[in-house]
Length: 166
Image 1 (tube, rainbow, N blue to C red):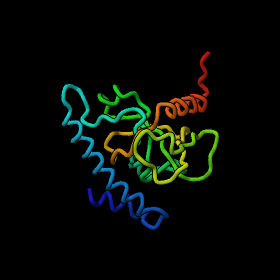
Image 2: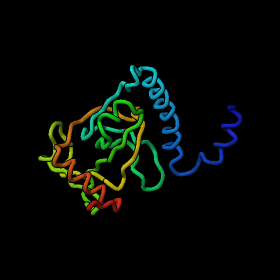
Image 3: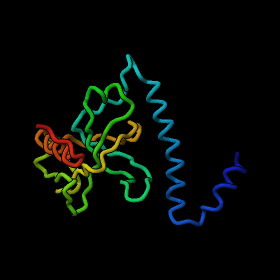
Image 4: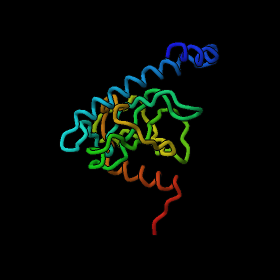
């Protein structure tokens, strides 16, 4: 196996970002082990990690491709709380503190936080980058958004997906 790895990795070692992706590859094994351990802790079909809709978590998004969000960022739990109690995955929207605000983003102000604190305000929820992640990527809970903010974010998400109701 080692010969196989050496043979197939050698041609990439001098490429830009090799170390970053290789380190992520190793860390991903640890996340996979964490995910398997969490699955073994299930009781009555309930997952041991049960985030609630509207909560903010620090999330390890990893090393992704192109302009996809990567590294560790905060994210808002978008999936229904009941589904979060049984599923191994959750749907999240990442938060960014970069100053540019596009029409796919929902601005986050201090008044939008029900509990907890964000390092930089205003921030934004990047609704165009909604994604599904394994719960092993959750690092820790940071806070919770207000119901009014969640309502605005849901409307922004529907608009981004061109889903309209009468």
